[in-house]
Amino acid sequence: MVNDGSTDRTLLVLRELQNFIRRSELLTGPIKVKRWAMAAGFKVSRSEIVVQLDSDSQVDAGTFRELIWPFRNPKVAAVCAHGVPKNPDQNLVTRMQTAYYFMSFQILKAAESAFDTVFCCSGCCSAYRRSSVMPILYDWLAKIFLGSQSLGETTELSLVGS
Image 1 (cartoon, rainbow, N blue to C red):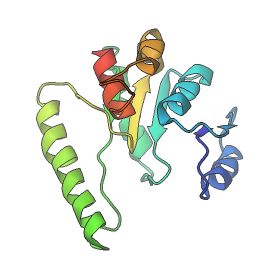
Image 2 (cartoon, rainbow, N blue to C red; image 1 turned 60 degrees about the vertical axis):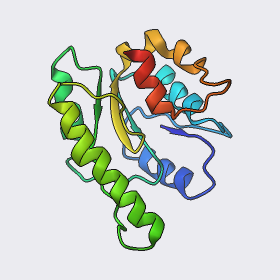
Image 3 (cartoon, helix red, strand yellow; image 1 turned 45 degrees about the vertical axis):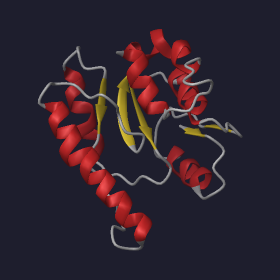
Image 4 (cartoon, helix red, strand yellow; image 1 turned 90 degrees about the vertical axis):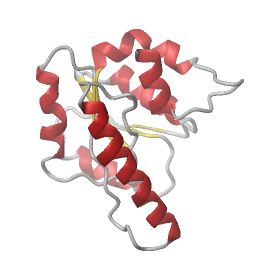
């Protein structure tokens, strides 16, 4: 588990979670760039399947089983979960996020799945085959667009890996 330096309750929750997960390791520190925190997780993981969650994501009990299931096919390199905001009508921002998630997950991801591909795995909840990521890890970390690492880290990971 990697905490990229969040100042909310993330570290406390991860420490509590660590008590329930055998052989777990917790990396924490002021890693201000999310892609470097993600890379640290890939590097220290002993598992073939690495799950990435945003700190504000909540997953249902069956999510991990459903997320891991497609990896039975050795050609699958990454899987994206379906995201739904828990507070869709709280304010203008959450309504906009709900519309964005609807477009992203119910329309675009559904269309992508018709081609057995995902163009970008969402940062809120995705899983990756570690052996597919490790050969491109340093290319992904070094990826520059218009002079900076400005694209989303999950978008760039998908683009470097394709």
